[in-house]
Image (cartoon, rainbow, N blue to C red; front, side, top):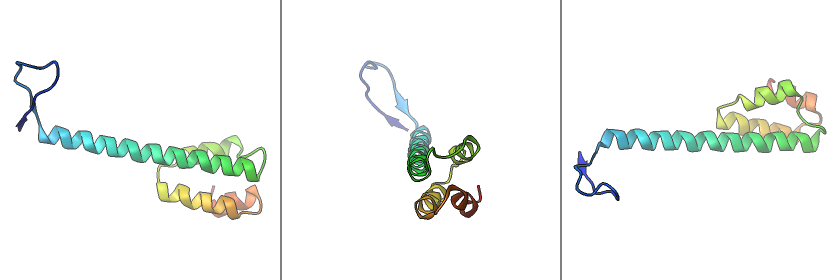
Length: 95
């Protein structure tokens, strides 16, 4: 354990646990990864709307928004920009 000084904690015996710091870092990394996937999903839905107006129907949008795997979303984006129709995208993406 490491003793640290924090503003507002002067005179207090404040100790930070290395384990807690590691958990915090893991949580931050997980949050950043989830934010990245949400951003990629946003761009995928935008690409579908641009290519196939008015865009993804609600069932397809729900399935896309449920994705948590970044590589899967990136693959879907590639399929979206290559597909000749929304139906072709759905079939190729397995959605």
